[in-house]
Image 1: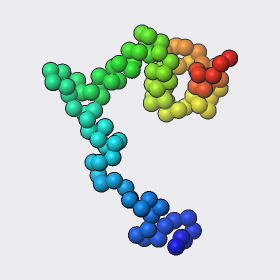
Image 2 (image 1 turned 120 degrees about the vertical axis):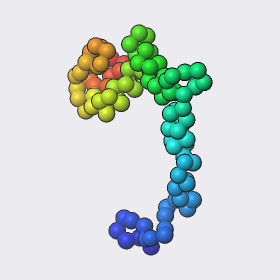
Image 3 (image 1 turned 135 degrees about the horizontal axis):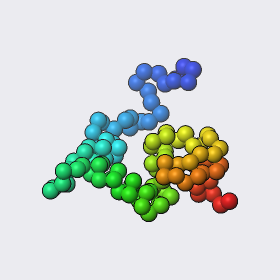
Image 4 (image 1 turned 180 degrees about the horizontal axis):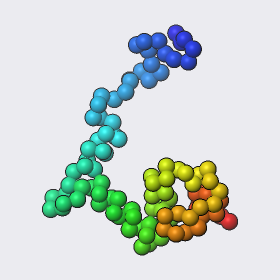
Length: 102
């Protein structure tokens, strides 16, 4: 039985409940990305960040640029009409204009 908008103690809309700690895909991915490949001094996470930045800066990959903006600015461009992204590309109409036709 519901009280207001919450479940009674011991009840849940998810009959299987939350996965045990360490078993969610997010947790497994976070743990794996902390590892360093054999022979490397950088973790997978550090290497991934370097590759994304490389794609954004040297290849002008719009998906990499958008990903960086989202992580760095926490989606700030979504609510703001005109900005310049970190690599100096003017963005008229916010982040959504990066994939929308003019």
